[in-house]
Structures are given as structure tokens and as C-alpha cells.
Length: 156
Image (cartoon, rainbow, N blue to C red; front, side, top):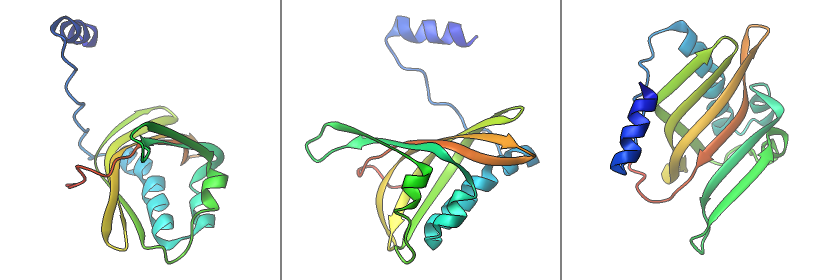
């Protein structure tokens, strides 16, 4: 079915419609979101140690967004390196909405729109893509990849 839709889209020259988020009504999805919500709390509290408890430290944080000259810029670093920039009192807050969650055994992915506020002002937005692994019954974030822009950030 998906292949048929893709072929139709290519034939028509159109993109596929965006995926619809999965309704969050199961404990499995809630469990996958738990380390992500804890990550956001650690960002807001400026607590690098708490952040590192939710991730695989050598996993990656990758971002793509526009540079000042308009070109795209890809930035990547380990969670350990990212943690060095977490500071208390920064006023940083990130939120996601309408997450699409897919789980297969001990791997999961979360795809969601997000925005970031600093001191109450939205500074950027885009899409977050988390991939997670469950080990010993606990979910941890392996990687976060996100797009970033400063326009069209009216959120939800």
C-alpha cells in the first residue's frame, strides 16, 4: 500500500502527505516519552548530570538549520559534549507536540514538532527525531536529530 502511494505521488509530482501522529493511549508510548520528558526537564533545570542519565553518552545530537548566509549548517556532537553546554539559569525550555511514536521490541523512534523558548521568548522551532533503545527494561535516548528554523514558530 505504501509503495502504491509513493508511486502515485511520484507520478503526480507531489510529496506524500505528512504522517499523522499516533494517539498516545498506551503505557508503552508513555514509557518511551518518559526519558524525553526527563531530558526536557534537565535542559530547563540546567542539570547536565540528569540529562546524561537519560541518554547513551556517546550517542549523537545532530542539528541542521540555516546559517546567517542562508546555507544549511549541519552540527553534530556526542551527548557528553552537548552536556558541557547545559547551564543552570539559562531559561531554556523545549516542548514537543503531537508525537508520532513507533516501537518495535526494544527500539523506538519519536518524531514531533518542537519549539524552544529562552526566557519566555520562542527562539527557534522545527522537528525532533529521537531514536531510543530499551535496555534492562529502561528506555534511553541514543540519538536526537532535529531541524531548526527561526520563522513560522507559532507552535501549537
